[in-house]
Structures are given as structure tokens and as C-alpha cells.
Image (cartoon, rainbow, N blue to C red):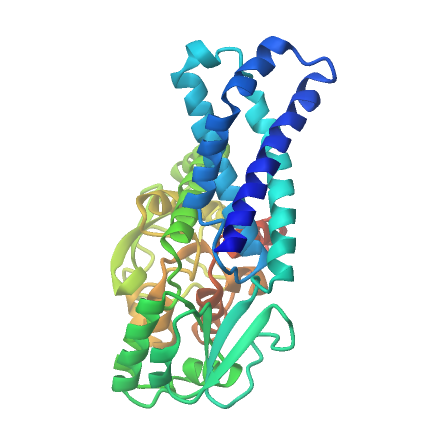
Length: 418
């Protein structure tokens, strides 16, 4: 508690130092008194608002699992404080009318730098930045670097021993789960502890081959696989909505040209609607631009498209190569049926035919692009897709989604894959 009080007091000082430095950055050495006076008269109240925001985002926790964890909380706290501060200026504009809103913008990166550097050094010196990992099984984990002073590994032999583990950041499973009783206990503890779960390479390989547990038991894995904190899920959803809206606006000329081209070159509807499998085995109607002749599967039934499929129209081939045919799926993303990043949504027929496309792969929303697509250019077969999809599900995060979206751009521009 003493350390938290010290950090609180010093951070309050550093926050005001950032504000004071922001004025000469904004105005130079000749700072207008009329603009500085509102801060001078009300700096204590402004400091209170910011420190309350930092407390709310838990910047003064006893321990952080990484520097990134500390940085995110500091960033969120200062951002929240800045938003409250600007709202304060607006509500009490008579008293704060001369206070420049630009000071909030300038002080943000300065305060973030000051507070993060100081807090990270103090916490590191006192051993408060450390990731605590529990490894189930006697096998040495390769998922973490146990020799790093920032990682503390604890080995246990049975799932039941998790009952004594309270302060945990991650659980690595290196031991087979032999029955549903153990699995149910594990799921209960994971939900209570709210931690990330990863599998050791050996168990991961067995999971892919379906040997870890029976098919019914694998359904329970979706209870926690891919699950992230409410805040992380909110950010991922915000990225989905904002990203989809931006892309729809930016790509609107291509949407209009694609629709016109389809209508002029082949009979039938511009859009193609198809039932696909979503999270937890639910179904939804996926939207695409039609790239094949109308009623292409009327006689054959559901079949995978071949590389030189004769059913694909000339303009359809171009739309597929450039991924323009996928643009309408942004509507599915906005509706919440899909995400920008995730395993590609499969048709119920193929999910039924291929066990590897079921259960674990349906733990998260399907995506417009995914790890499998940036690694193998959209042309993976079902038995290969699962390897990348399960890896993504275990490491799913906002940062990984941004990375995959960025890496998708050259794949699309190079027109690789089917």
C-alpha cells in the first residue's frame, strides 16, 4: 500500500509537470496570462479528475504482468482524464472559456511518457512487473521464458491444485485431460480466475488430431477458448464497426462498379447470399457479390470452387482475385455476425463433413480475413486451416487483429490464392 501511495503522489506531480510543460510547447516562452490563469486557479480540481481516472483504470495495481499491461492502463487512464477535462471545460465554459483545449492534447503524450517511465522503473525495481504462469504437467513449458525475471512459472501436477492458485495471469496445459469431470473442473476454475489459457506443443498437436478428448468434450473448450476481457472484447468490436464503416465509405466506388459490372455481364442477382456457420455453431446469411453463373449449384449441390472453375464468370474471376466480392461481408461485420479477423466462415455442409472445422474453430466469430489467409494466401484445405485458426484463437487480441489486417493488404494487392 505504501508503494501505491508513493506512485499516486508522484504521478500527481508528474501530471502537473506535463501540463506546465504543455503551455510553453503550445505558446512558446511568452505564455498568455489569460490562458494560463484558469489552470493556475483550478489545477487541484483538474488533478483530482485525472487521478480519479487513473485509479479507475487501475494504474496503481500491486502487480502488472508486463510493461505493455502497465502502458495500456496508463494510456487509458490519461485518455479518460483528458476526456473528462474537456467535458469540464465545456460544461463550465464561463469559468474555463479561456483555457485552451489544445493543452489537453499536448499534455497527453508528455504525461504518458513521464508517468509510464517513472512507474515502470519503480515497479521493476520492486519486482512488481512479473507474469505469473501456472503449468499443469511435468513437461517443461516452451510457451514462456522461465529464465526471464519478468516471468514466474509454477508447476502443478493436477487440475485440482488450481484451487490453491489465486494470483495467476496464464495457464499452460501440458497434461492430457482424461475425462469430462477434470474438464468441467478446469472450465469452472478458468471462469473464476479469468486468465488466458494456452496448450503446450504436444497437447496442441493432439488437440488438432482430436485425441485429447472425445468430440462432445471439445464443445466445452469453446467456453473459454478465444475469450478475452470485456474491455478487450469492446476494443475488438469497436475496431470491427469503425473499420467496416471506413472501408465501406472508402470502397464505395468499387462497390458501385462491381454491382454494375455483374448486372451488365450475366443474368441473376448482384448479390449472392449463403448460409454459413458462426460462433457457437449458430448460422447466419453471408453476403457476397455473385461471381458464378446464377444457380451454380442447382445440379451439383454444395462443392468447393476449383482453381479454374467453369462456373465462375469473367468479371467474377476478377472480383475473386481482387477480393472485391468479399466487400458486402462488411455488413455482416457491422451486424455482429462476423468480425474483421477470425476463422473464415464455412458452409454447414462442409462443417458437417470435416471434423476439423467444428467445435474449437467455432469458439470465436468468423472473420473477413485471418491468420490462415495471410500465411497461405486463402487457398488452404480444411485440415490445414485448423492449425492456423486454433493458433489464432489462443492468441486472439486487438494487437493481433491489427497485425493481420495490415498483413492482408499485400496479400490482396498481389492477388494470390483462389
